[in-house]
Image (cartoon, rainbow, N blue to C red; front, top):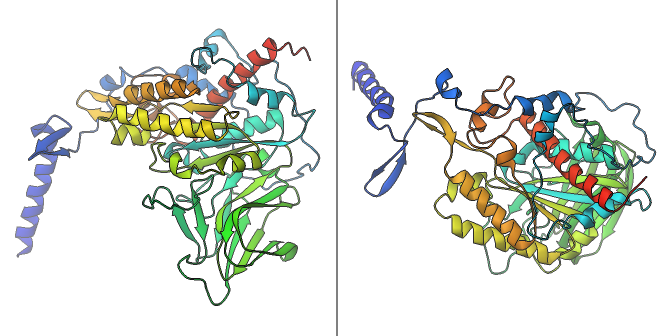
Length: 493
């Protein structure tokens, strides 16, 4: 074919593509029973933006957030115990009456306003009974790269003591994080509830919903294999992330003796040969506060199921960031096993936060009842695993779809939000309405078009600045409830 004919063909194809939004004004068209999503015109003119929510009050939180991640080396890290200060007022001062509206209240089921009391009671007594308590923050891609979690974690640790970033999967889907940097040997393989088919006899995926192995489970190796994890210093992080003094290894299931060694630079801190064992195990190593360049080496004929590494403090609070990309929050029945409550107790988990919904809006907009029933089942199993651990469900955020009239809220958002709320209340969980907190209907464009931008241009995900605002909002809301708890219980200190 001559070049001129090729050029003409390409011109025709491009012309047809450009005419599609005008020939088919609707975003979807049905052909032979199939639904085809069509490309839309990008609408960002002033007229379309006029209908979007005013979020100027929320943007004030950017100035109110007391700390941002630092691009600095850790200097003069104090190794003494963090002090614990009780909260008497909202930790970030309210500057005027209008800012009081920034506290999107936590919501409880009927007669359930004491659901968080077990968690609050532990916070209240941390100074008299020092211990490390964990908060598990599960979510979809909205919390990847430690978004939202990192800010909330830092605020909690500043208030109640503690340090470190908590649990880290050895082979994450997205290794980018503001809170830690690490390398692993190339022979690690990842096994996840999200990329393996459901089986009658499933492995224990662990508290992170995934585990890693450095050798195949099919056949026992005749020779020893070696693998390593190298924990380096993070490039950008909050100050409290440096103040860990304990490194923990979560694993289980090795069928042969396993050599495990921890080194800092070239100095061996600990080394041991562990016998074969099926059950969950945890190794605790005391390390220098803020230690960098930690290397964990494994040698053996059979790999354990390595659930993760945790950088913690000996006491205070740690919040684990557990993103499950692509999840709608319906996979906990595969994580849940009979010893799951033992793992929760071993890690001293005192609160679970579930933040899902992005994928449910995209994939389940026509199956709301199915989603609600399935989500309720997950909540019931988690509640059954350890009834004394409160669960807070964070509802889906606003999500926009592009239409000839501008970016408008996806019609499934409110339906999914309401289904999450009903399921939360039915199972005895607390609910936090992120959709309403960020402004409600048609609020996402205001976050995307803000100067500086607070959300990504996919109109689905927050960016780092927007995540910081949401982390602050959630922290204020939780501490507002903690204040009520202290007042109700007559804490006069």
